[in-house]
Image 1 (cartoon, rainbow, N blue to C red):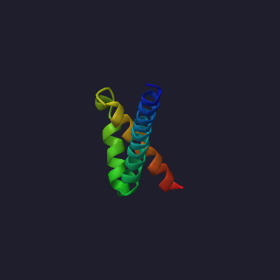
Image 2 (tube, helix red, strand yellow):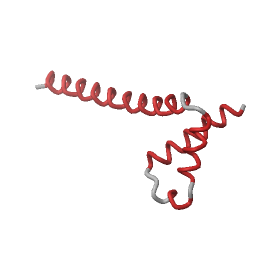
Image 3 (tube, helix red, strand yellow):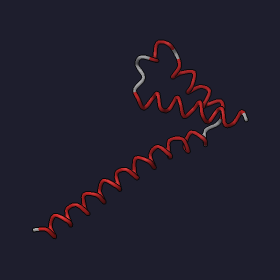
Length: 78
């Protein structure tokens, strides 16, 4: 009984760890993909996502994309 509990815990922790790593990679990939886009396209994304009419329609993912685009644009200006 005890060995089954330990094995279950190890498998459960491994799955949790894998999911956490995948989420980090997705986050990293998003900004890496944005870095590959041309400046004019990043400016267009920022303009589209910053419009007053769309600001309340943006999802959390859209807001994250907007912040990432601003970060990449500021990196390029330096």
